[in-house]
Image (tube, rainbow, N blue to C red; front, top):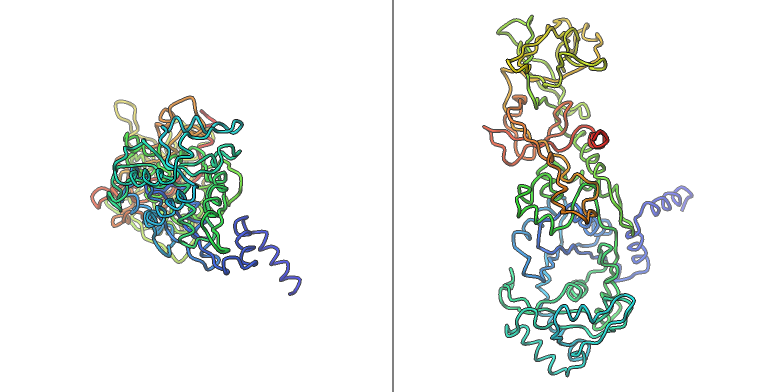
Length: 567
């Protein structure tokens, strides 16, 4: 191997994240027959959010990179919270992100095997039925510095535990009356080893198995065993499961034979500024109608981000940029916003949209006449070409592009000042008209016919350029201006107040009677555009041909920090 090849190989190794390094080492050592298999195991009790996207990119990405497979496995061990609606939404989100699973499994597929395994544990004296209350069990577990106390049922006869375990599943035992616990070590320094609960009683019908089961396995018992039954080689979890790993391994060691064992590896979860990731609290927002559903564009859910205008590529690029570590931290949401700006800058068509319109009348432009001017669709992509845009005597411009008495550094329309109308002419403001309340209703200007874009005189320099749409050739639209849902940087850490009190009252501002170019007549939901000088917008699912609705995906620049500094 040449020196250059050696350098490239070393550079490639340095660019691997720590999980990829582990996988490559396992492959070099021939573990699991050189086989790579991962799984993405969501619980179907809510919609996926941006934090889950990080796990999806890792689970599916590792399998893709090393020619392995990744299964989708629903952790449906708690029928109280689970629903088919969530199963369908999870599948849709994974597909939208651009990933494909090898197989779809459910933890409930293994209920029979898990039951048989639990029976084996009882027969081998490794599990027992406990009739204490949850509060009594919690007290007897002790603390990290105080050993636990054995349950009075810990040494009950095997036959008695077996009989009660079957009754737990027959419907004879009320919920909360008894549980099955593993018999490990009540004095262990690892609290998870202090006789963890393996099964509890739930009488609510399961979304797949109906009323077949009344005793349901706990996550810690179902997770590792399901990995083993499936043949998972690398079980990738977030850091909160690191303390569970010894128990994960202990359960497997009690029954697994041969050299194969799934290996649990933990990575940092995604915590993001001005964002709440708790499924429970997100559900509260939905149920209390503080947002307009799971796909509200202010929500951190994948379907909410999709509706707001985020692309799969922008989310995957964001995940790649922040990487994977063994340390939890707080990621600035502006990095996610930067990612979508970068992506849409390359692909989004530039159009004119006027959010707060006021009429501009070019008093020296011939009445009843008009012309077409050329507009570049995207200067970043020549293949997108150009279009012809109607121009005439009366135009709509942004209200804040005119000031009657302007400060020195104001370079837009003010009496006596010149600006360029994007893709058209230089105009000089001559005045305005107001209503009885002093509100400007019309702005007046004169255009210079020799300064049309592309003409020799067009090179005359002016300091300001503003966008516009033709009054006679435009469409009405509703524009929804979305911003960060919370006012504080880390709402999850605000323990002394109700998280609902931290909501940003201006996270959604709806603007009616906006004006957009006529070329947007046939847009479809999720189509994205750059409204020049304003931001990136996409078509909402509420939009119809008779009532266009656009969501602001992100502004052209990050104005949040500047705004917060002013406040």
